[in-house]
Image (cartoon, rainbow, N blue to C red; front, side):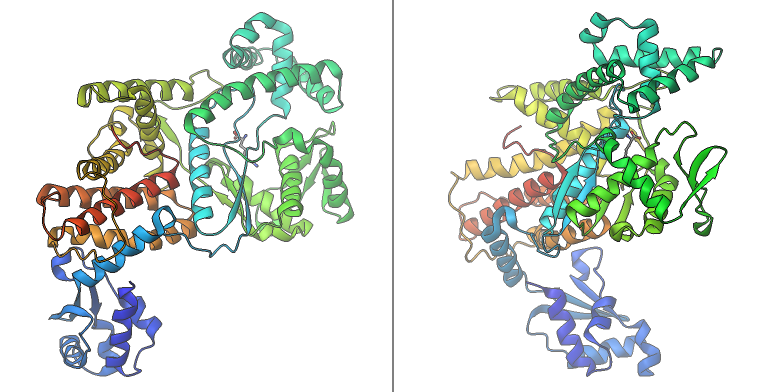
Length: 563
Ligand code: ARG
């Protein structure tokens, strides 16, 4: 049921061709509260065109308007306020939701186009930080949203498994490392060596030369260097996978930086053939002055590759392998300048999808006021935050619902969901200070609140005896239900908006809104009263449950039936 179309159509007729349907539709507003109508048409901007006062225009239009599709149309000053027919609208909306089920809101705008998503991408031998959490959960949600819009996302974990830091790490390990220690507690130990390296090289800059040599050896395939690298990588990946399991995030590929080692020669060759490489103090750079950007350093004077060299190879590979419709990089805002450089180099190289490359930035995250940094050793381990959250969720559940059957499992779903939702409800470019205790509350704009609202809907359906709600009839006249019904009808538009803006917060905010309107309805109406409208009300509850669950799924958050 598309009321926007209906309103546009009757206005177009009444305006008799003075405005196009698109112009009318663009002017339509949504009143803040339903008592002012469900859609409003302001007439100020028509005064010039029609040589009449806006109030007069509104009144004249109202006299001419075909109002049969509406409950009523009111003139308030310069506004025409349309009130939808609640019975017709609720029936159409609920039946659409119930017929579609979980695929409600699905569209095929993406035409199956491939969208590689560069996401998570933590660095080997370092703990996965809250920053990488953002990339992981934002990327994962964007992938779900893209699928819902008919695209085919490819989630690629571009692990930081190559680069000069491995020279440092090998140097540090050979100086101070111990095999047994690393085996016992890989990431912590490796970080310890790395941090020590950075402390000591302040006074002993020669350590940097040794590290450079080790990295060069690694690039040249030296067996000892390669063996150590492989070991560090495997051990780190195991710890990362524990976190991904906890978050329920899966990847299609783990093509880290090292995957592109054998593809760097071609990059350099193309750059040379196109006369893009120039020498600068012994190094090879691409001049980007015409983009108003600093030159991109492609090869160091010792011939070693850089982060960007590997990213160029990555982009080329994705271009050829996927012929991407979009090409996304979910990486923190601090790399914005870098991605401009990358895109500029790719454009100079004539890579077809260069224009589609899109950096999807996000802001910084602090946890309970603490900043994250690996170098200085002040690290907040993501695994620790998750553990803490699950523990707190467990305590909350013990208090609220001590008899719950699968408490452990639900505590995990709520604890993890709180963190994921707490992140995704923010516009991604915002910086966030994450206060765990706040995100775990069952009231307020939190994941547990939305989960709890879904569980409440399920509990109502259970109490009603799980009767089969059918997609027929379902006219809910109760004015208390009206906002919930309208919010349900908004979902498909939200799915599109979240996709256009690559913004999971659109879905998270929508889920909060739906949960709020539903809880208000629940507080004001006796849903389970035995009367003629009971089946229709249960259809509403079922629809709410379906759409809340689907919204949470798009965010990568679980929706337990009981909590
Ligand atoms: N490993 C990098 C970091 O932690 C992020 C990689 C982002 N992806 C890319 N293709 N550059 O900062």
